[in-house]
Length: 165
Image (cartoon, rainbow, N blue to C red; front, side, top):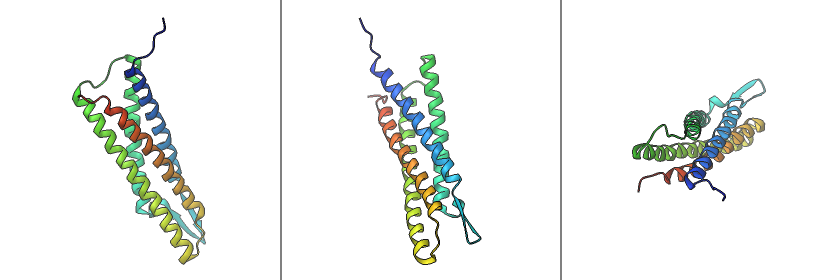
């Protein structure tokens, strides 16, 4: 007779996979925003000169740290078969922390995409500067951040299954 994994095991495995995917996307976004710079006519443009890109960087770092901590706790839990944090309070904390992080990721992606598109249009139209590579890197980073947000929102749905009823 075949034995199937329990719903809880499948849910925890799916959540672990999502957290790994989130970490990978955030790491890619971090690398991309960090290398976003371009020199045009002797003037160097860096991502740190745009407040929205700095906010995006801060959100990426916060999300990456949270994701790596949750991933390591999930791996420990799967390997040992025992939760590090048990009880209703831990489940409630995980649920709300996942919500907060996903909202942070969403606002970071929105800020990055919005600033990038607006500034790109302004620099092209008024100053006639060709900063296509600069804004392409920033847009790509924000896009990876947005994908991480979607995965984080799905992870928060999985963590809601652990809430006490």
